Length: 186
Image 1 (cartoon, helix red, strand yellow):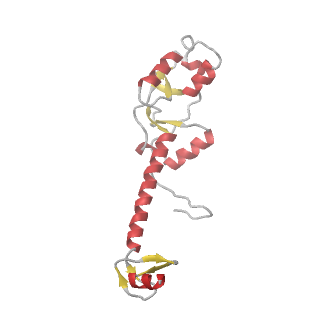
Image 2: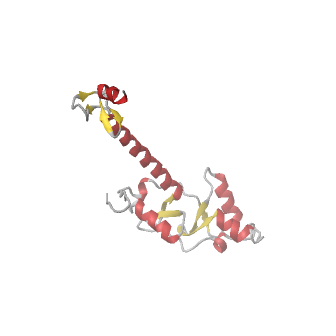
Image 3: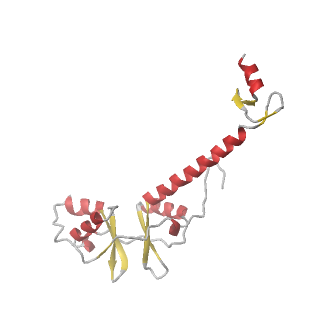
């Protein structure tokens, strides 16, 4: 952990630990309708990685379809994915840290990073949603640590009389035993 004017939490969590391996894909010669149907046929719509000869070359997103096809009144049945996909495809390796992936997403202004192996074969995808879920998990863990700390502060030495107590009460920025608490409130 590095301390500065704001707290910076560094983790060694790698992208491969949070990526999803069930990536929606579509061939670059498929129509936009084919891509849209693939996006709608699964639980989470949003994008398809575009493949050419089984290698990822681009991505087509709901935004691509809306802005490049629907908004321009272009026929999706007659438009090929390769004509409207976003390229070049920005990918990451599975062993980079999540922190690096976040920085890359910010720099490149993307919400999805396909994960490829050393041979450039698609093995997964990590999205902003995946990273947010990780953040929620970390927040829960930090909350649990806070609870452990709070419980340990409930017992100890009274800061007024110096006696050991199983329960301390926070009164005026002091932890007081029951006797000193009652004296304070009188």
